[in-house]
Length: 113
Length: 115
Image (tube, rainbow over all chains, first blue to last red; front, side, top):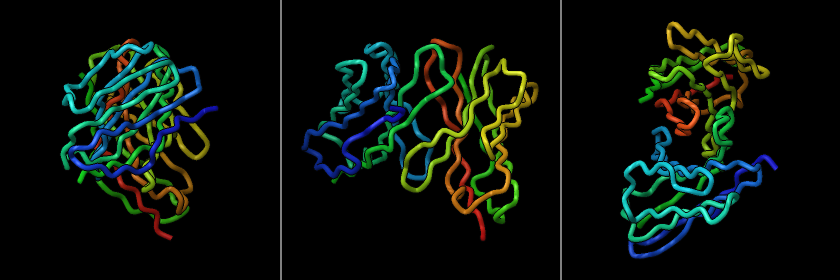
C-alpha cells in the first residue's frame, strides 16, 4: 500500500461548526504532515508529527487542532473557522531522517460559509 | 532557512517537444533534498523526481530528468517528448538537513501542452 488516503474529499462547513479531516497511511512512515493550499498558491506547511509527537507548528491559529492517535492516522480538528480558511488541505507522510519520499494524499477541499 | 524560486509562472509548449522548468534554491544546509511534484487540477500532488545534494549523477525517471547544478544552486526539471497529459502545475520543493522534515515549495509553474 503506497497511498495516503484523505477523507472527506470535499467539505462545506459553517463558521460555528466543528468538523475533522482524516488522513491515513500504511507505509510505515513515522512522519506525517498537514499542508494548506490556497488557490493558485504553493502548499504551506501547518504541522509536522514525528513518531506521533508534534514537532513543528507553523504558528497555526488554535481553531486548527491536529491529532496523531497512532502511527497510521492523522486528524485535523476544525472549529470556528473563517471563510478565509477555505482551501485545499493536503496530508503527507514520509520516513523520518530518510527524506527522499514524501507521499501526498489527494486532499480535502474545504469551503467555510 | 530554505528558499525555492521558480521564475516561470506559466509556459506553453507544443506537444512532443521537450520542456525545461526552472528552479533555483538557497540554503545553508550541507545536506538537502530537491523534489519536483506535478499537481493536476484535481489537486493531488504527484511525486516526479528526487535529487539528493550528495548525488553525483543527475536523477532520471522515465521522461523526467533533473538537471542539478550544485554550484549554481539550480535544479531544473526536463520533460522530454511532452504529452497533453503533462498539462498541470509543477512545483519544485526542498528538504533541509535530516532531522528537519519540513518540505518547502516554490511558487510553481503552470505548464500547458498545445496539441
